[in-house]
Length: 493
Image 1 (cartoon, rainbow, N blue to C red):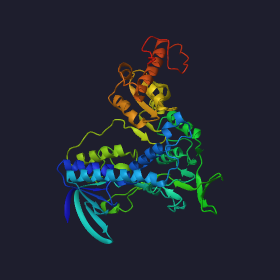
Image 2: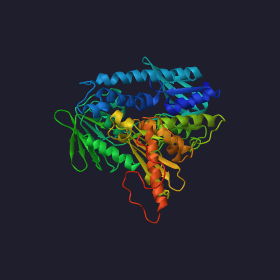
Image 3: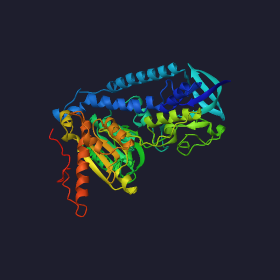
Image 4: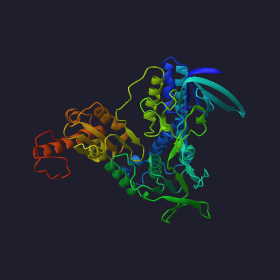
């Protein structure tokens, strides 16, 4: 039986980063993944293909140019499924080749097979090559479970992988339905609903909760909801799905708990995911997953109840981001082999690649209120910046939240073009303990959307100065962000 220092189950962001880090520390590492290619959910059915689909849809539809050329503007008159699949396929091949090269360069071994526990430090691996099934066993000093998640598929939903699909089957071969009903307005559901809306496909979105994206700032989410309604997306919030049946023509019909019927050519069920742990035989190593297949870990070391077995990535739950999963994987390898790193207590950025994008870091207004922080907000609207006007942006805002007493930046929230890129400027200032004065006192390239940080900071500065000058008689705020006090003023340039 072959022995490794480190065996990783799952080749997604957490697994690959952990294996490579272990190899860099001079340890032997093996990655076992049951897919035909490395990359995990992120590369096969998650982050990479969905974001590639988004970019393809926006480019082919001419979405970004419609403010100038009209809502009827199209880059291509007719968009076929092959147009969507072509770019996804090219991106997939590139990502896989990069990962394979990284594994080879660092001496990490990989096996395409199904791994399961047969002991606290032993793994059975079943491989199927051209119909020939083989079984091997390996043992390891340390192990990492990073198998990711799979779509939640309730028994009462008639999935058929044709016109009632989950998010994995939906992205494998994306089509262009005449109409689409999306069940579940979490991150995945919102992304696909707004992407296909940009392709001018009628969308109905069903969500049992009254509010979308509860972990994000309410004002930012309000802008998203307004944008969706303006584009004709039908929102059925506070409504739960009772069941799905089919019309005489074979099209699915969703019946809501209140009796309403929603017909469409296709239904995408995107209401939750569960840990892909059912085939791991966790009992053999003394572990047990929760009812959604997720594992409990020490959030500082990522150790499970068995200290030699770690878990990281989506399989341990929130925040379930590729970026945080990578850092978790690196932390696992460092801790496992005597090079522990400090737990990252800095605020990570969140990104929702809907149309428009949303991204945030730090506290929301609600977080600040619950923490008892006296705070203030400043806003910059993309359409009021020169770069935004050049780009034809009609919507989008950048919002800063600061502590009124210390002027420290405590939250950054962005919705609009490039939000997931812009947020990193605020992330750096926030995590380094900076104040809004950084944005006021430093110059930004002009014209850029990043200049919105200065506009929002000046808005904040003026609000803070007005309140400080006359605390006994609060000034009525016109909403323009300007004040009568002395201080930095917005330049007409």
